Image 1 (spheres, helix red, strand yellow):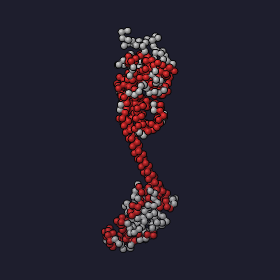
Image 2 (cartoon, helix red, strand yellow; image 1 turned 45 degrees about the vertical axis):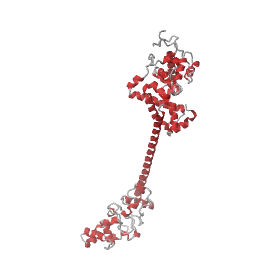
Image 3 (cartoon, chains in turn cyan, green; image 1 turned 60 degrees about the vertical axis):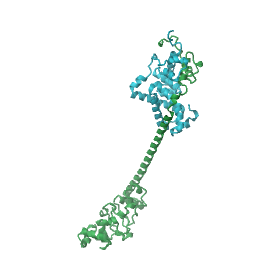
Image 4 (cartoon, one colour; image 1 turned 135 degrees about the vertical axis):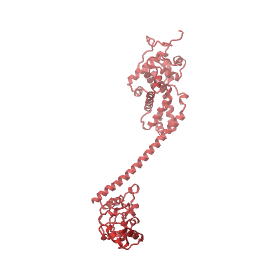
Length: 187
Length: 272
């Protein structure tokens, strides 16, 4: 969050001011990477770069507050993902999280790590095992820090649908992480 | 690791109402306040939204530099486009002005324009070789430079000043060099001077053209429509003879060689 300085930062960034661009970038790049990792795994960095290029091309025309700007940026990012999938169906097939089943665990067993302190990467990996829409809804809410209405706008869904997706995803995560759902080896 | 994912009998986490859901999603990750069964989820969400890692911020310099380059390139391109469109607009204004003068010329021919405009139109028209009717014996716009708007100084063909000598609208000095070069010009000079001429070369050329010095008079009179009287006449009707060669229109038949500067005849179809 940039806060009260956002309008000034936005205007300066549109003019190419280095500090302003750095401020925007530091605020959004980590969030973008995490979002894009959940949606597109290894393509996240390239997609993030493409997102920024599209953002800078349109930044002069953008009008709105900080949440609006962030919504706009993530909408662009989402389009980059979709375009990337169209360009490379093969990559997308490998990149999508397993749909609807949840029996595919992340390579480094984030479920086990959960109790020991979980890294950001592991947390995202676990989220990525959710059905795609659930994963995306959770990441947009938690990582991008956007409210239901904005998430709904980005995903092209109704707010009620976003709530349902979020709820289901969190429940599924709870199942995987909660002591009741985990099966200890040998017990 | 197997999961009893299909088995939700009491082992699954409780459903969350909207309020609880929002609290869980709120960015504080305090497991102690998480709804029952969701402590680990709260920790996971906190990890997902933790501070940026050094890895994630690596490449900031290169990224920002790239973005600045794009901004600069776009503003340069924008400035160039604006300059191009400004030039086009100026060119358009010029073309419109010239066109207005041309249209004005048509109106002038029908006598529906005030005289200064008519003169201006005529001066422009003579540049492009369009005939225009004789005025009431007024001096034609000298060089046309003054009345013709700035348009003429840029794209209009043959700025009036440049063409002044050529079409001889203003009869100043002896017949212009260009006119003198033409046989008709020489003839006119000859006739006007009643055989006397300051230009032996021109006389020689006429002699060649006419087939002999003694034949020049007849030759020239035959060439000049209207006969010998045109040597001094005024208000001669528009003739095509005046319109030969670019910028060589020469002085009007009536006021040749600048001998009669006061008797300015309006040019007729000159300048061509």
